[in-house]
Length: 446
Image (cartoon, rainbow, N blue to C red; front, side, top):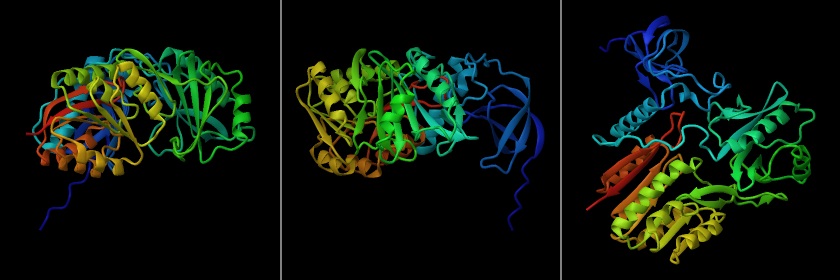
């Protein structure tokens, strides 16, 4: 007869935090139960209020008795309420250490014994983001903009500044926050679900993403509202989902004076459609591009295949002037790809637009053992059909760039079963002051 489960501890307890979880909370074990503690750091000694019936069990700091030796002052005046830079109180070398441990634990859980290199630091620890994505919501009849606290939360944390963003974006952010602070539901225009503030050649530009189709009133309403906001890069308007994701099947409205988003590719400026994906930390992304360029120069691949490739930044770095095929769902990227290919001197670039689950089958049938396949899927990971197609192809080399170690581990398990092994697992800190981490895996099979 099985023994009854021991009751979870309740009430308050004094404890020392032991580690960090994948969502950035501290972890502490009390009488065999693991609790997750927001706002705490490894080494903090604190009195905790335990909440064993949450999922997972959580705890709240009642009183910090002795701070961790790695705790530092947070430089942001809104840090106490903001979820955007929760690790800003942790010394940067410790952030890198814990991020490597996070990747190591996650991947070993998925594929067994594996080695992970030390994290390569971001060139900038603050003011590194070339764009911000802000949610818009109603709270107590007032309009708010800020960061979502949970993925599907209808509200979030209002912000008026952000030390993660390029300084060129901050006047626009402050002015937009001031504008929305003055709005009430009775006098507000139709609200976007999300506002993106991004770099352009002239300074900040914005993209307003509305739930559903754009309406005729959106353009004049927001042109009037934004006339006193410092947006030298101009505004764009887009249809989107209820979650504020741009619907790229529909036209994106470019208002007068609106400029493309500005990013970099191997330290060269590149202009990108603001609804396209590009890495927010250009400096750290260039480190990955440089690694792929060295890989391409040392291996002389017959062709590079860039899946989920966007405008081909990774693929062009690895291919150099050799043949490149970019597979990407949206055709918005095509123009940027060909401009970047011309700059790189690559005259053998193909763009395969449309549903990747369809285009990958034909691509996989053409892959050879002398090719390199690059994967850079969204946070949800590569589609199983894509991984299966690669496993069944003749490809022997894959470079997989992931922003989600858990989904990376899931996909590596499938690729390892097909004979691939990790030659290199290198984390890069694309997201200083947060728990998030980017990982480049170089895979080969006999």
